Amino acid sequence: MRDHFNIAAAVLAALAVAPAAAYALDAKSAVDAAKSAGVVGEQADGFLGFVKGSSDPALKAAVDEINAGRRALYQQAAAKNGVSVEAAGASAYSTVVQARLRPGDYFKPAGGGWTQK
Image 1 (tube, rainbow, N blue to C red):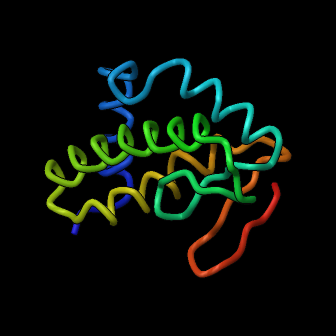
Image 2 (image 1 turned 60 degrees about the horizontal axis):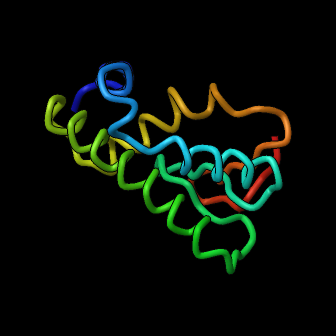
């Protein structure tokens, strides 16, 4: 199994090449606002999750859109590195996403509950 650095490098390369393909700007704006409000957070599997329930269908669609874009990136990284999509997502979380967490953001480590940075 390849190390986290190679997987993270593949994810970062995919982000640099096709960030617009990963998710739309409107979805990113909606999710960024929800993160700031403590409604959405980052999970150890590399995907977004709801810290608090939300009945907003537009926000759910935005989260789903970004997660679909992330899944596509993780699939590319997984194929390139000979690992599972789950391993690529977890690696991206530990090497890329955690470094981008801002004070006040929520995250959910593997096996843990939601925590605020």
